[in-house]
Length: 102
Image (cartoon, rainbow, N blue to C red):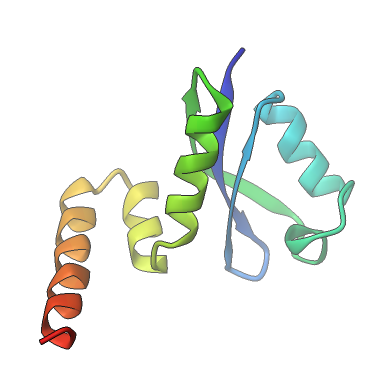
């Protein structure tokens, strides 16, 4: 059984990160139909901008949690497959943490 983590671009310009073990097409249709009350219900229509599949739902959920903690810039770099920018942004955050802990 496959599982997915995905990023949706909402009509207000924000991003939504989610995961599912269901069909990705079905889950996006549910977001666009407002099937579930939540973040995307008031921000429709939504458009899929990134997805990654996993063999286990636990891996998809772990990745979802990680992505939810990312800045908008890092999410946009991931969407663009700009892994160098992700690396640079991750280093900046690490450097900031080091400087503030001194």
